[in-house]
Image (tube, rainbow, N blue to C red; front, top):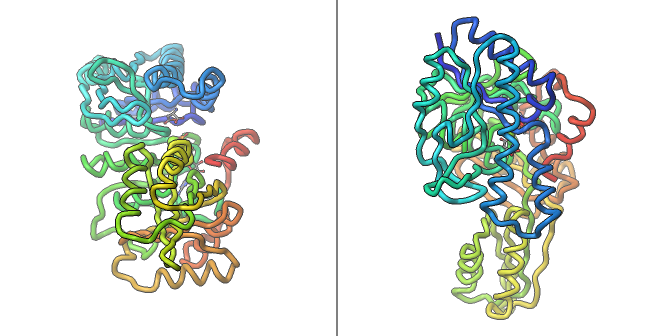
Length: 426
Ligand code: ADP
Ligand code: ASP
Ligand code: MG
């Protein structure tokens, strides 16, 4: 008898038929003697459509109203799933983030969960009811609705699993686990049976969208085991958990890519102490999330400084740079929106020299030009032009011996969904 949090992503609840499949799966769990607690995302592309509606009316919608709007997507799917379960003769009740006792800080659109009051959910479970919780949302101290960042239903699931003391947190999506690269980009990617928290966090924060990085961070902090698996099959997926000596440890766990960043270059800035501090303090003050930075070798006391940041921060970044361009004695700045960041990730890297050399050789052999480089003890990232991003993923995957014999096969996705997946993040 296990207490199981089961989270279903947008594709898994995209239509009434799919919602019925989810309802059946939850009922089967209950019939097997387990206690499922469901967490759902908004149906299909609902969140994107809501964002589109807001943009049609305002260039800069108030953050409070935006979160209120986006939270409704999950509130539709939670009620429909509860209705579907009831229609099949079992008891279910839907709960908004507030009703499920999820409290957050006040950072609209990227709120952090501060507290889960799980009494109402555990009470429902004790009464034999299947609770269905709206993902991606909570309330702040003023009871205003907040959202947890795109993909945030994963974080709801992990937080609820912790809050109710679940045995496992199952995250169902349209792939059957975490692969050594996005299998839609590298069809020879292999499914991983187990990934440790550190590798998963690095993969997720480098763009592997299969699990939201906040969710992995939360899971690592509180020791919640995540099982990433397919909503369309019963095959076991990938366990994300603390590293243990039994785990097989390859040098490289996987390759991640991210097409959601842009590169900004400030040209001919003065090369003297204090300039970089001025640029990056101004960016931080305007809430620009700077990722990679490179400063060219100085000539005649002048230098170019490039940095990357999320495309979503570009408006603020440009405004900031325009405001300080003269103060740092720079001539001009330029923006490159067509970039991809590709990262090689593995905790095994710490103790194995030669990863950088092998990665650069593989890229060079395939004529991939590197624009920026950054490293951490368990990650090597390069920025390349967007049109070389997928090639870079595939050649690095091959170079590190990660290719599988078999080719990834799609299950249950419509042609339209497949096309949407392929262009995601661009
Ligand atoms: P959901 O909507 O259910 O939350 P997502 O679309 O957020 O699902 O996540 C699943 C997608 O993540 C897959 O369709 C896949 O294309 C993408 N993905 C990116 N990197 C990986 C990876 N390393 N392993 C598996 N899937 C990945
Ligand atoms: N619906 C939200 C999104 O599209 C949250 C989620 O799906 O996890 O980002
Ligand atoms: Mg997701």
